[in-house]
Image 1 (spheres, rainbow, N blue to C red):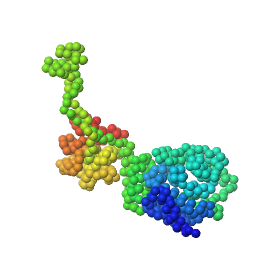
Image 2: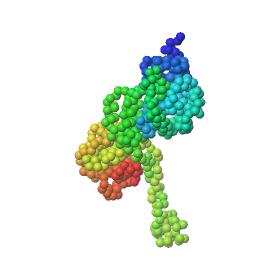
Image 3: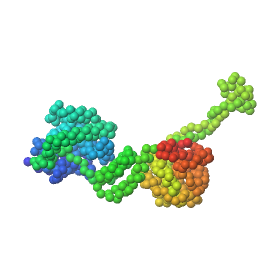
Image 4: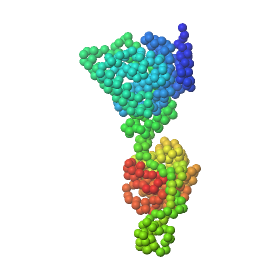
Length: 532
């Protein structure tokens, strides 16, 4: 008789071939109360030999059990959830339906996607045999087995016609969910969670009715019951604390923009629970929740960048009419608007011409120096000033440009300035969210540091200034920015309450734009590289 270890090696050789030789380590056997799981850091599959013995008692031979468990766990790695980001999105969508059952919903959902793919697309019968062993009489498991039988086409040896009306209705709803179409995953998980929620509510009612009739027997009182009986899944699980730091960072960066503010803390705790160790990183994330909230808000209010600018082309084009004068060139006369008498002053009309402009060719996005006024007076402009800064930085980062952070009150913050041009979003956003204090002044030394930063860029530079304009030396700053030929475009985002019509009339042109915002909803009106 072949040892279980040797049979595992044989089954693994077969499964690897069927899955086109994935590059993951050989599986191993363990001895505890679990079933099976895959470690999402080293991608090693572990199978509990006691569980294999349990399945043998249920009528499933060892080879079928090993093949089914290996295929199921491997498909978690290859297909669903594939990575932590997808797993956390499924959890989030389920939590929005009912936070008390979100983990249960996620576990069932990823198993259904996994198993459905194996049975339908890979024609794997071993997984089907494992699913048949679960003879739980709960409504939920009846619905799931009925789904596999009717949708996956695998005989589960059940009669769905014998289901009660509530179970039939839940099964009919579940059959409408396209589990294998990831494009509809948000909608799929939501519908699935609603189905599970309704089933659990019905089972709770049934339990209360039974208890009211004196039937208080539960699984804890049945000493002959195996630890594996009535398990929600017979395959295994993906364990917490088993993801890389890079996986957690990716999940945070991709999912945080989708969150509502009230969801942030729970999401962060859940996703950090998937990471083993890395205490300093976890501490940093927890301490920067305020910045994450602002990042969420900034994604709601994007700022547009115009990559194409108007440029003079040297030609003269008709622009408007004026009355004909004897000194005008006959070539400029508009015969059709001269009432048949083009050469009579007062009746004849000629074209007044201006220099033509065309859009320049598309070009790469310039780097940016984002200047943020961090004086005490800016406190009244938060958080929309911070949100505007982050939104502006996003516009450049999303277009493969680098950003330098220039913070100033009475002094320039050399710590941020010394970081130079960077593409590390979290580092940039932390700088832009520096707390406000002190007064505000711009002097020769401040402008010298700004000049140096502009010159450090390896390509053109846009300057974005976010301020309430309560700056000692404001005119010097504006004149410097307006007349500096080394910068590409200047965008002033004014966050104060005073009227600035005089500044707009003096400075606003195709290379220098001033926008006034007083709330986050104003931010999308800003166009970097465009005229107001």
